[in-house]
Amino acid sequence: MRRRTAVVATVVALLAITGGGIAVTALADAGGGTKDSAHQDAGLPPATSPVERGDLSSSTQVDGTLGYAKERKVNAGAAGTLTWCAESGSTIERDGRLYEVNGAPVRLMYGTEPMYRTLKPGDKGNDVRQLEENLVALGYGAGLAVDDTYTDGTAAAVKRWQKAHDRKQTGRVGPDQISFQPAAVRVKSGESTVGDQVAPGKPVLSTTGSERVVRVQLDVAEGKLAKKGTKVTVTLPDGTTVDGKVAAVGRTAKPGDDPSDKTPKIPVTVTFDAPGKVEGFDQSPVTVNLTGETRKDVLSVPVNALLALPGGGFGVQVVEGGRTREVKVELGMFGQGRVEVTGGGLREGMKVGVPKV
Image (cartoon, rainbow, N blue to C red; front, top):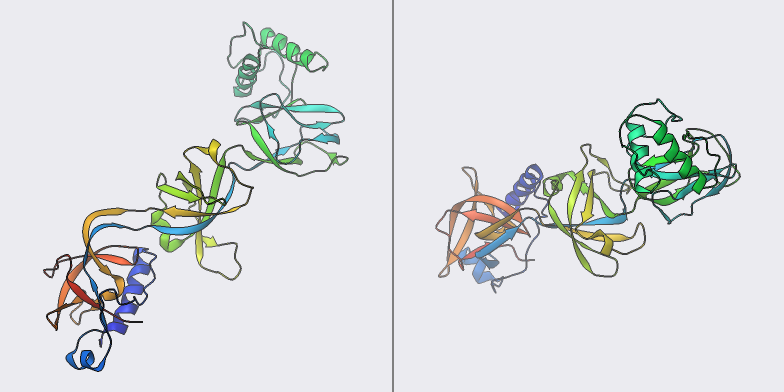
């Protein structure tokens, strides 16, 4: 057809604008058409494909990396020599040892506010509340009222905690004894080596959350498929498939990790519906299927069946009884190499012209 080349360029531009992310390619002869001189003389297309009715999904598959959530660093809370550090891959829960400075352990307690001062009777603040919540959870705060004030009762609970860990029972506690983290952590790597000199604010450990996540770098053109809450399926390294959803979508596009691919990417984080059942080595490659939008019971044709009409818009070439006619159509959703079409009197099973490879 004389306009087939023009429509390819037009549809490519359209898909770039809409973010359809579908490559326009020549399809094999789905309708059994043949390319010969008789077809050319009669103006028939080299191949045909049927108009189909069914569900159309704007799904796509992208590569991702299996990892852990909430990466962050744990800084030293005291100056001295690092004498012990939790091993990479280990999970540290409440009251567990993170590292030791000069032989004195720094233990994990749960809280969103960092431990930035030495707490003592009379102090007030959310860090006091966090400390008291942990003391109660660990069984050292019997009768302790959890509030924002460091009382004598708080000091007594701290002394019980210090005694249980063979520490001097001062009733005071600071960053040289505990580190507040939002939850249990998994040690990713050591930022300092045993024997190094450390100081407050110097990173000791790199940690993550204990739950598995997948990180994806998604082309900007496909960004609309990854809205927060979008359901996905993930194929793991062992071939099993698990359900998940998009948990976070970055707001800034930048080139991905592949130096040969300068296409702008958006960082996307996927979480699992049942994270405890997900296994696999850290940084393992996985495949993420973004289901996108689904349109139910619609008519669709292959993308490369579209023609750019002289007066504007798009049409298809209907083939019936050895004759052809062009009809104008309205385009809907693109997906799976097809496009939703309406108008032109199209019906399921009709044949439309397509290029032949």
